[in-house]
Every structure is written in structure tokens, then in C-alpha cells.
Image (cartoon, rainbow, N blue to C red):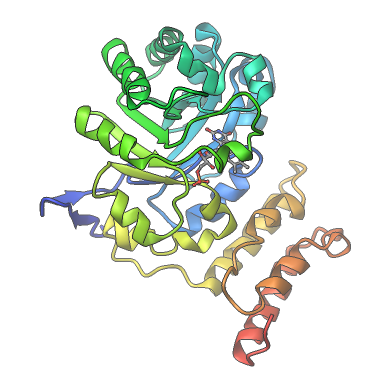
Length: 348
Ligand SMILES: Cc1cc2nc3c(=O)[nH]c(=O)nc-3n(C[C@H](O)[C@H](O)[C@H](O)COP(=O)(O)O)c2cc1C
């Protein structure tokens, strides 16, 4: 069994294996099972979140399409969007039956489409309804029910807004894990994309939550891109969730097991990862489930970030005529170009 123990800030030895010390954020259209498969090859310990799935889609739609995932993906959480307690509970039950380790409720998405359905970030204004949702979901499942939210909505810029939200849920529900995107959601006037960059980050609010609610598991999210930043945040909170950087530069996760989980395994080599991607692609394409090469490689365009040949890799794996053959050997060919560029110093 690998060593997974690490010293915490109080110099106590802690075993972090199986915890949400690090996680990859839920990202619509991005963190699907193909992305998560690749992420899992890079880091064995990091907790992975699915894209947000509407509870109705699970209850009334094709469960397999929304819930199926690959063997070896755990620990993996599914994020639900919705605000109907009974429907969320039914969806949560299905999530558990499919083998997820956690079900998360989205209270942070600012998209106008989501606001219309009265869920996502606007739920921060309806804490009693959130409590109902979490309680009904938790009654239906054994796995933990968690919540992801912002620090406030629109003009609510005081710390007390988020403190009251968390405090009420602590008192009225069994939810122990709070994932906080450390900026407001501005529901009026900003697009979802702008809402990830423009409202200012207030990490100190999240640190204060951990101080005020020490028994809760508090995870911080928003604008975190380097291992140094992660290490700093871990001095203050229980876990760090990384979104865009883990997608655009997946190899940022390469040393997370060693640095943050105390693993003694060596980080994965690029060549090994490429080989695994190739095998996975071939197996998926042949599985007859309608998967095509593009569904898989579109998530690996950033894999060579920082290496010579990264641009060639990206170009080849997004080239429609090359992808048309649906043959995973394209991955190996693109990798050979990266190898060549690095061996002979051919620049980008
Ligand atoms: C393309 C994209 C899709 C996203 N979809 C979701 C989602 O489905 N559910 C959610 O809670 N957050 C979603 N987010 C927000 C992220 O989970 C995260 O909170 C945000 O990107 C800030 O973290 P970062 O700065 O590390 O990227 C999405 C972000 C992006 C970039």
C-alpha cells in the first residue's frame, strides 16, 4: 500500500487519501467522462466532479447517458442542478446507484437559463429551499450530499451573507462539505463567462468561514492555477478545487498526488499517458456507444502545454479532416511530432 501520509500545518501526520484535499471543478461540457478518464490517469487521488446535470434530465431522461462513467474514475462526484426537492432526491438516488461517491447541489451557476428554472446561484437567496433540497436528497442516499456556491449574489458583498447561508445549512441539514467559489455571482448584466472573472475574488471570506465553522469541510475555488497557490490555500482551508487550469493545462495535476496526498508513486510520464489515451480511444470507439475520436481528444488539446510542439499537437488533434477517420493512431502521430520537436529542438 502506498504511503499517503503528510504533515499538516500543526505538524501532525495526516492520511489524506480518499479526501477532497484537491478536486477538479464541475464544468459544463468539459468535465465529462472522457475528460475525467484522462484526469484520473494523471492523478489518482484528486476528487473529480461531473458537469452539472439537471435533476429532471436524470429522472425523466436517459439515465445511462447522463450517469454512466468509466471504471477506475472514483472518487467521483456528480453535480445536480435543480430546486425541486422530490425530483432532486430521485435523481440523487440514481446517482448513488450508479456508483458515484458524492452528490453535489449547484448553488453557484449564474446562467440566465438556470435562473429561469430557479436554480443555480439564485438559490443563495432561498436558503430554506436549499435546506429542503439537501435534506430530501440526504434522506434518499447514503453517500454525502454537498453544496457548491458563491459568496453572494449581486450586491450582497458583506461576509455575513455567505456566513448566514453556510450557518443556516449547518443548523438545518446534515451537509458537512461546502465548496465555495470565492466571488459573487452577478445575475444581472454579466454573462456566465464574465461571472468567472469580473466579480472580485475574496479568499479571506472563505478562510473566515473555516475559522467560524471549524467542523465543516470547507473547499475553496476560483482563480487558482499553481501548486504554490494550492499549498498556500491549504494552510487555511480543507481543500482546493481547480477548474479552468486543470482543463487547459491538465499536466498541472501531474504532481498533485506526491505534493498533496503524500503518494510515493512517480508522476506519470507523457509517453505513458499518450499510450493510455490511445488505448482508451480505441476501446471507446469500438464500444459501439457512438463515441468518436473528437469526443475524447478535444479534452487533451492542452496536454502538451509548455512543451515544444504543443501547437502542432493541438493543431493535429483538432483538425477535422484528420479526425474524420476516427482512428486513435492520430494521437500517436501527434505525439511523435512533440517528441521530434523536443529531441531536435524544433520550436513551435
Ligand atoms: C466551461 C465551464 C463550465 C462550468 N460549468 C459549471 C457547472 O456545471 N457547475 C458549476 O458549479 N460550476 C461550473 N463552472 C464553474 C467552475 O466550477 C468554477 O467554479 C469556476 O471556473 C472557477 O474556478 P477556476 O477559476 O479554477 O476555473 C464552469 C466553469 C467553466 C469554465
